[in-house]
Length: 121
Length: 153
Image (cartoon, rainbow over all chains, first blue to last red; front, side):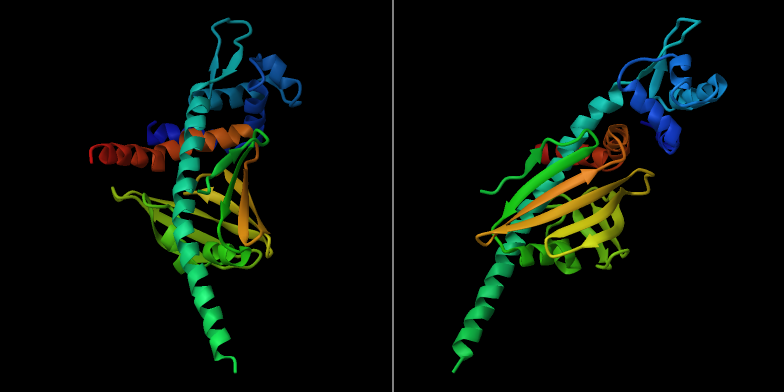
């Protein structure tokens, strides 16, 4: 993904209405009319939001001249699962290293405890 | 051997759990002391070059990571709750607009501590966009390159 496209994606996501539109489309395709109703917005206002989402590559629109149904683009979602796995790997590697740090902290504590014990009259 | 588990959660969340052979007090110390954070966070792949934190409610933290190819990325946020058995903070990857709330609970049983981490985004869409586009472009690319380097070793 190019940096320009990435900027477009994130500015598209910065708007609450557009995120709600994406959430609605995650359940299935919808026309501008379908979308205008629950959001209590005019169709031109919804169309404006849809243009932004389309430019950002987050949705596609059907060819049907009348309805032009909107669909969520599946590719970013598939990538997301891959990325959750990478995130998990990041934490797995971190926590494996944390085991070593904790083992050392445990040893230091035990040494201190022993010394305190020995120093008791 | 203690293993990291990915647990099922709400669609906007990611839940992970891991048990450590140490009391809660030490796990919390290792996770909130900058000199110690630098020694484990990122594992063998990423080096923490900056670890800053102001451990109080409303205080900020910032961890800057560097990969072997020189690429840097940052996780930062604000502490919302601080207790002996619970830590809540926000998390932002680089300067992306989507922020998550991370809730960590520490449960100690017979000298071992189970760390339960919930990373919650505003919605599944936001979660998937952060993971699908944001990270893929930054750290992701770097990890891909790193994978290639490691595979060739």
